[in-house]
Structures are given as C-alpha cells and as structure tokens.
Amino acid sequence: QQQVKQSPQSLIVQKGGIPIINCAYENTAFDYFPWYQQFPGKGPALLIAIRPDVSEKKEGRFTISFNKSAKQFSLHIMDSQPGDSATYFCAASTDFGNEKLTFGTGTRLTIIP
Amino acid sequence: NAGVTQTPKFQVLKTGQSMTLQCAQDMNHNSMYWYRQDPGMGLRLIYYSASEGTTDKGEVPNGYNVSRLNKREFSLRLESAAPSQTSVYFCASSLGQLNTEAFFGQGTRLTVV
Image 1 (tube, rainbow over the protein chains, first blue to last red):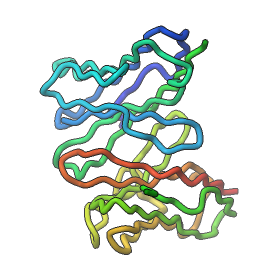
Image 2: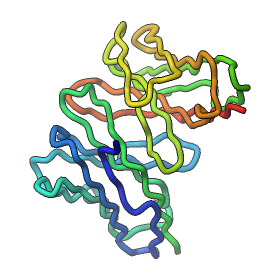
Image 3: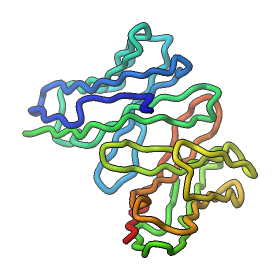
C-alpha cells in the first residue's frame, strides 16, 4: 500500500525551464512534507520542507506548493540548471511518528543545456 | 564533521550468508533508521530506533535484525541473505523532536547471488 504517490517517474527539461514534480498522499495524519534530493552514489539530502498550515514555501529557486484539501503537494524548480539533475523524492511523516518518513517512488530529473 | 557513516560501501554475499551493516552518527541524534532503496520503489523503512535501547519495525522488517549499540551506532544484520535483499541500504539519523531533518549516510550497495 503506497501512501505517497509521486509523478512523473522521469522528467527532462531544458535549462531555464520549470520542472514540476507532484505528490499525493492518503494518510490525513501526515503533517510534515519534506523533499529530498539525491545525486548518483550519494544518500538523499533534505532540500525543502513544508507543514500544512501554509500553502507555499520558497527557498531560493525551489518552491513547494501545498493543497491540504486535495491532499497534494508539488515541487517547482525555477530557472533550472544542469546541476539540478538528480532524483527527487517527496516524503511525509507525522509529528508523533518518531520522524519515520514515508517516501514517494522518486522522479529522475534531467536538465539539458 | 563526518555526519552519518556507513560501512561497508559495497558487499557481495552468497545466498544464505550472514552479514552486519554498520552505521554511526556523530551529531548526537536520538533517532536512527535503516531504509532500503530499490528501483521504482523509493526508500522503504526497515527498522528504526527512537532512542538508545529501543527498536521498532518499519514497513519491510522481514529477514533483518537491528541493534542500537549505543547512541551513536545502529547496526543492521542479515542472518541468511536472500537475492530479494539485493538493494542499496541507507542509514539515517535525526534529532527525534517533531520532524527535524533526517541526515543520510552514503549507502551500502549489497548484492546477494
């Protein structure tokens, strides 16, 4: 049973474009939604995170949009660069879940020059 | 500042062999986790430890055992390896206080033949 559904599986965008990765969740107890970035041969690293009391959060070129009623959230990368090419995972957890993360299946993003 | 250190980085086992994956963190984190990463499936939680002396099952615990040796170290043991356990294993740690960032190690690529 997949509690966090992520799409697309892969995405190719031209440099300067705005890739968008979408996630949907089922468990209404989730209240923390991080995005992790993973480069080949490395472990995932936290990119940006949001709580459901806000609808949008920006950090540099990365923005999370959150729709609580639809149980969906998405990652937008503004002015994308070849260095952003990586695998991106959305995740979710609950305040009382000992920070156990439930991950989406990942999106392999390629930014072409 | 080493963060989360996993050993070994690569391992090949024959079916039925046993081995222990080691993990240590130097950030004084309370919580530690073991995830496995498989293509198209994201990261799935195997076991976690909310504090020294406690361990709990995650989503996919069958075939694994863990030990929280002390606050710094959390090991994962495969008693009788199976080809289905071929995967990349990640150890992670976090403060354990209301969804703070999880820090991941660089992973162990395990192949069971």
